[in-house]
Length: 307
Image (cartoon, rainbow, N blue to C red; front, side, top):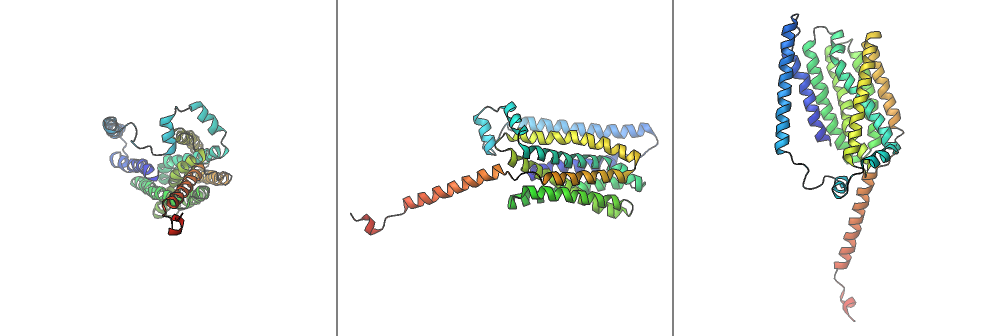
């Protein structure tokens, strides 16, 4: 899961770097418009090329189902309405959806306001904004990979959900304080913010798969992917108003409080690790069958052969 998320983050990182290289601050609006059009046409061309490649070469589905839920999906027709009803009655999954929405909504708004926040305190740092955004995403890629490794090794989904949310709040607070100090500290705290906020991508999807099992993973992950979009709109609108009314710091304080609230909500999610429990039971069953098979294949002692 973490490797799949990293590809998405890599595209976001490139999006921070390339636009500032081609779009420069200019008093001539026609020049600026021409630069923006060039970037838009370039991005559109890349998207079309990728679409063609996927259409031609990507298989509809893998030969081997990647999960038990995918296997059941091939065998049976998916009851979409029934899946939504069951997920709606799943308290743990709903709580996770709220936590994931807050985390990703705050991250999206944070990245959206990065230009305004940095330039408010460092007016001549227009080129730095893109590099801060790049480092933020690259650090997030490292956080995503580390989160995936930690989950695979320890399986503490709830604990890591709380930890990453709480440290996201701390890193946002430090980022706010660094804006009045130096651009170097802004780079460092921006990287820390990206590490924990973006790192939650993997935790959210993996935790959601655990809580929603054996429901269709496409539906459960789709809901988790959709909720942050709505949360991002709300966080962006609210953050914009806070910047206008109180300033950048109050906006960041609001983000910090939201992440603290997310960590508190995460602490109430039950440890209902259904997918892991199923895998454990299957491993125990295989081991038990293996022991039985070995006992059956074990040759009898001479006295047992004597009749």
